[in-house]
Image 1 (tube, rainbow, N blue to C red):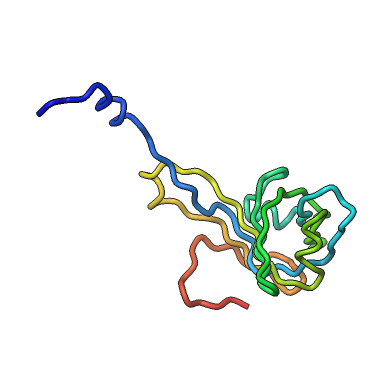
Image 2: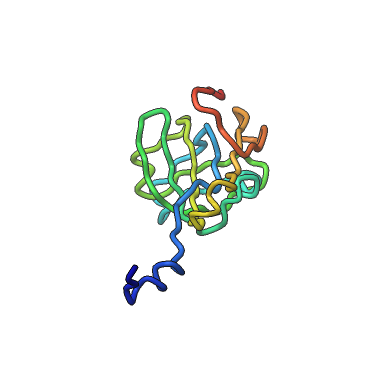
Length: 142
């Protein structure tokens, strides 16, 4: 068996996968502010429960109209239930829309099997209802 000069380097290379780290499921948009520079404002309690950090990139999936966008998170008032879409995204997502907010992270491939995201289910007033670490396909949580 012959060895190539890159064989040792390839063996030491670690690959990473982007996996779900935090999720706020079925939150109600409380405000849309077109004149704000950008981002999504999220109640600090929801940010902490989901593990989403200030300035972190998030994906916003609008259940109501199918819009999908990427932006960054900024903290809103603690316990207010605030979910405010700011800037140009306010053309896509409106008050009263149901949204899913997702944050991802890069994890070494060999650690993916043991990875568990923080999934926050909320009440109709955007208060944390429960935090779980797994989802089951076909289960509808309203």
